Length: 326
Image 1 (tube, rainbow, N blue to C red):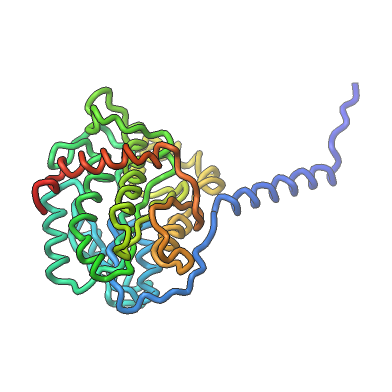
Image 2 (cartoon, helix red, strand yellow; image 1 turned 120 degrees about the vertical axis):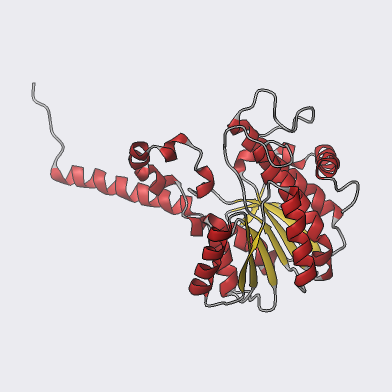
């Protein structure tokens, strides 16, 4: 039986179509770019986790626009090094490191007190830092690490900086969430996640908490000139995924490199929606919304639950001690 082998032109056509398809897929995954030409001269920006990943790329972009950048992160050595690199890459010397451990309420209060006493203004707060899929561990104050860092830490920080943001209105608060919030569910009977802990679901819940927090924050800030929006940066390979076994196994890491190229954004691409939400003139006054790929998107229904947002806020006030005093 004779088997007809494909001719050279046919093979070339298949290869060509495949290559074009892969390039188009890669182009689609890259997402949109923030094209705003806005300047930020004489503006001050705090970016949590600006020592690495999309936080650092966001800092570089905003520094190039003339902003004073506060690199807020836990590790002093990494934070100082990052600040120097941002200065070098942006040509802006107004970039400083300030220690902030979002897993410690004491550290957060110290950071906020120092900032409020020593800085004249705050125009943009970008809650970017996060912990992803880590084994069960607790913050200094006894909360599950992902919920405690990703939500409670930023909740406390934001509230302690609100007076400065209001004084500099119009100002913006940007909260980096994730599309995976759609898999989250707020279990108000076990917000701390001690029962049947799963690192994946704990992350989903913390990202849903980000969206609900932003939803309620925007409602409470109506009329103040301070806007609050959350966003999905896209699938980005960053240091926060260091707990995943695939990143810890060098052999597996090599095997999936082609998939990274196809489906994963670079940190610069992943930073675009954060930059957009922080500066784009087209969303002046827009608040309480969710963004992806530099445009407004629809968050999951549970992220728009007014009752859950209000309840989470009240419980977060109790957990952080804000209901007692600042």
